[in-house]
Image (cartoon, rainbow, N blue to C red):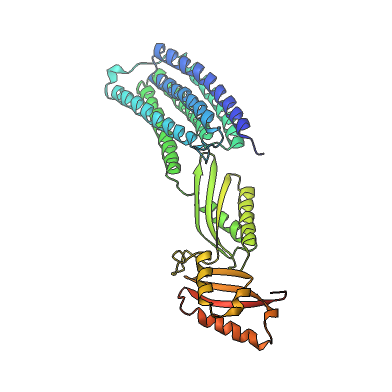
Amino acid sequence: MDLSLQQRKNSMDKATWWGIIVNLVLAIGKLIIGFFGHSQALVADGLHSLSDLISDGLVLLATHHASADADEDHPYGHARYETLATIALGVLLIAVGIGISIDAVHRILNPEHLLIPSAFTLWIAGLSIASKEVLYQYTAYIARQVKSKLLHANAWHHRTDAISSIVVFFGIIGAINGIEMLDAIAAVIVALMIIKIGWELSHNSVQELVDTALEPDTVDAIKQHIMGVDGVLECHMLRTRRMGHNALVDVHILVNSKLSVSEGHQISEAVEYSLISDFEDINDVTVHIDPEDDEHTPNSCKHLPLRNEIINQLKESWVDIPETQYVKEFTLHYLDGMVSVEVKIPFTILTQIEDALKLQAKIQASTQSLDHIRHVNVCFTHGAP
């Protein structure tokens, strides 16, 4: 089901506000109980929940800006606010993880600083496991509905908090039962988990900012769809990139060089419709129509004169051929670095059929001095001159 930008924003906001409420309660509970219960691992987990709370705020800020419609200054929309916020979240997680791990390692190396947690710290750790897993499932469900990588990343942030709480739970049990170092070791494990997810979020979002292509399998599927459109002879220069929850595609397609402009345009419209209909992430397709493979053709037509200049040159070369004053239509074909010309002349200006071949020969001969003209083909039509 396609959602409007406002519907998408409302769904993301609802999931995020639930995250804020849960994370606020858990962060306060873990920090207070961890401090008074002498559990370094639970304090570390509380900081993890606090980073979740900050990340929820970043999600709200990003979705507020990313949901705005495209405007004159941002013709592609504002989706990359989500990407920037995801990078900020990843960096935040890495910083939190490094801080926790440094303190925990210091305590491990200095056993006199190790503390034995109180038994009641297990209750908040267990509550965290249950509540964060429920929050993960709910947030991930909404993320799939609205196709938001940022919200999906935030869901995984909830999941890592649930997993870290499991580590904390067992670390506290070990410390209570005489292995005091387990609480600090649990804190290090939690910190490494935080650093890992932070790195993955930042790395993936940076790849998006530098316009990294879609996954190879997806690109191959896109190419197959394009080649399946009637009239497409070949496709090349296929480029893809992501922008927030959307994917953008640019492609050159080769069509028969004799097609009309309108038919070539219709084929490009069919390519665009096919991709947007069959790929849920793709919302913008730019199709360039080629009459020849400009990726491998050695002779470019970029240097050739345009229509009015060529017609004037032809008329000057035909000054001694009076029949050319009746030319009704010019069709120009720019191919392989030269121009092929088709002209239409009323058949009624000729006195006998043999004159058609003579006129064709004279017109062709008169254009020999124009080195960018490959040939001129004369088509005789019915009707008055």
